[in-house]
Length: 288
Image 1 (cartoon, helix red, strand yellow):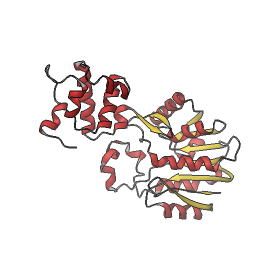
Image 2: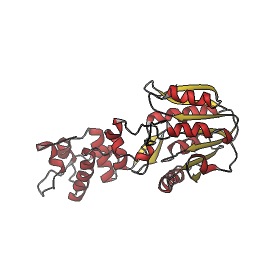
Image 3: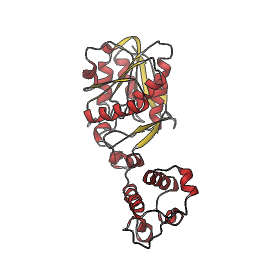
Image 4: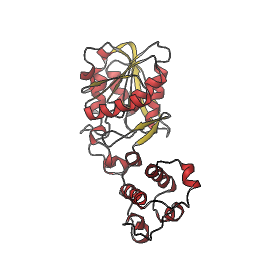
């Protein structure tokens, strides 16, 4: 968003005679109302109903300045999830930071299909590789408290974030550090392996657009054609899956056929792709 003139006034230094109530300040903001409310709720530590009931209350100058600082970050394009530090996923509120990918509604398809795969298995062993914020692993653990959920990532910083989410939401998850299957070497095989790996090609123009500009690059692209990590996961899965177990992976909008071919070539059966909320084939999997 590029602003000029009166539109940018709310991001300037605040003089003593500047409007001091929400009712007077709201029209000066370039942000949509929902985003304005979210930022004011963050600054004031209140709910939306308070904003409505107290919109004529005089606000402290330091709170107005704090809001302006957050607003300036949003105007510069920074994702709201990073500014307020949380994102809802599968009905749970996850803490997020610039060290992890922002959970997206499309990925709920992966969780929902994963739960279907283990619905008839008592105390299933589930592995989530490249766990990021822990949204997938923790959601699975909360939906299936009897499951033994293992989550891995190559970054200690990322695992710390995921562990914090598991602790806050009381999800029972075992965290392991390492690259893909190296993280769980020596463990018993799993009933289900899921992953939302980096699948954007390194030369994809979308990496320089929107929220993606602010997200960790290593969580978005494999540095190659976008299929490298998906291929690594498929080719290495065999020893880590029990007979009849499943592998499910999220992938790009145009990668379903490629991933299906990978799975078939690796000997997987009942290979199928599932559509996300937009009708795009977003998740593909098979059984060993």
